[in-house]
Length: 219
Image (cartoon, rainbow, N blue to C red; front, side, top):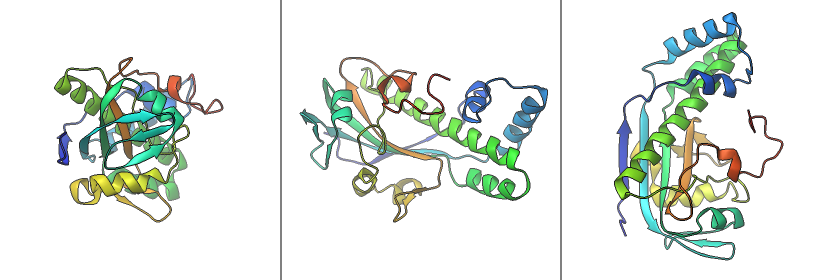
């Protein structure tokens, strides 16, 4: 087992305008919306820092208990997700605080821009997580299970505390956790990714989520 906390810094992944518009709730974008999107991307571009810290851990599941030696969680959905995996990657990722500042700035003067920056931030952190999982799959030469985060399915948000205790992302990538379990910078993710198992990483994360009334489901 690799008990060391490792970190990676990424170059900027390509922007996916379709995903940004999806996060913004735009099913059909007119010329005005596309111009707003272009303007916001131009302003936000180069303000991001793409950082990840992670740790390889063994995993054993028994019923709804997921044991990673250094921590364990009770979650039936996570146990199903990790089916067949002997190892897992626990990681934390962030794109930095500048997008939060843009959202706060335009929240006071331009709600439409604030919404677009929210959507850009959501697309950027997902792009970072996708790049990291692709790296891990290549590095270990195995498929990866869909990433699973606290607050997702039946894994409680309180699991954040355990993940932060094991990864120390405050020191590694400048990511902190508030008493109310919110992460700062806000456009950040913590997650568990199984190595190997029954199937590879899927782009359709809705397939493993039980939130049937989610705004983004099937969009």
